Length: 538
Image (tube, rainbow, N blue to C red; front, side, top):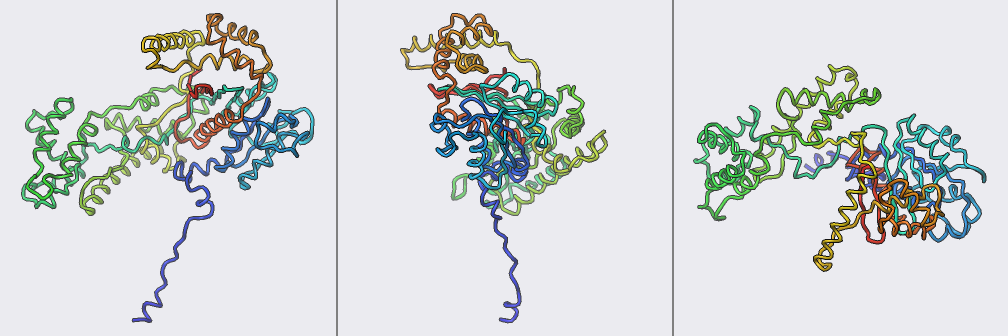
């Protein structure tokens, strides 16, 4: 016996790799596919002004492991830089800021490649920077910036369909703006788990119907253990059939009918047991409102189906090939492909696994049908099946960013925000300060934009620029207050404001690179005095 035991070699257990240990937390957020996208990213930062917010953004991209970054910045480090930039020390004074920041950033994560321009003290040649590297995944630049350099960046971004992110931090205020190359679709939006369940109780397929009928064909004869462990999916399918027989074939889709159906289902629970009730029937009652409803398209899916693709490069994207196949599936079946996820519920383990496999099998079947449609479509032969599977799984929650070119004018936005501010002031007066509504951050944006190329502008010069953009704001008190605060900063950055802003920007950049989660659309303004953000589509 001993000989047999010792001759059996146990399987080798492989623990997580060093990289998996290092990036464990973030892998739980965006998985291996997201990490691979990050590690292949090549990011350019065109740094100017005080230069802190851009470096703080890079810090939050280097730590999770972007592939490569380049800093283009011809400023020489001075004493003032040491007080706001943690990636500079006394030895850096008189040296290129781009070189010093690059080297210290790389110490955070040696696996990340870093580069800087210019290589020697002198004027930065941005054309040379953009031509010396493979196409950048994303470009960030900080204000204030020379108009000529801004024009070069925008030209490059237009030619290469490169996302650009602009950042501006001055005093207690900051904003960042994301410019995406055309429509930007997000498939893996990571919706809340409880929203992803699709049980198809009103439209069950034959295998699910057969499973439910087998389990309930003699429901009254089941012993208490079996009856108390019927999955609530099975319970609802069984009593839905009885309800339809009593209500001319109609499903309980109205609020009153759902409440009546809930009472009907709960009345069938057994109470002559030690627990005095059955947990599975309670679960069934809770699940009615969310799962018994007429299938309808989410707003995001409608937008995808109705979107007119005008750009030829965009049209060739696998996203639109799959989206068209999903639309064909919907038109044929009246529903989207089944995601296949089954929520936890009280049931015997063997029964739950069988039910779970039924849902998974249906999801695979739907995904295969969509894949067949994709392969039969122009440009669809090379589409990866895993991409189709992911799209089918997340079809209800697909989101288009930058889908429409039209945005409200600054004049329209000003009138709207001014009215909101007046409402907030009135409520504060009426309630003697007990209730307050947030004030608009639009005036902060207008003041910062007015110093995009001239950080030393006076309050009067800033107000003049604001008036040129929005004539109605000439006498606005809040516009004047914002202008005075920005003028007081004179382009200087506060480290805590820039660090916080850099964290927010990095978060949005990661969403764009990984194409996961939903990035903002398209401008975020931060007021460090009230600690409040506001997002506008400008």
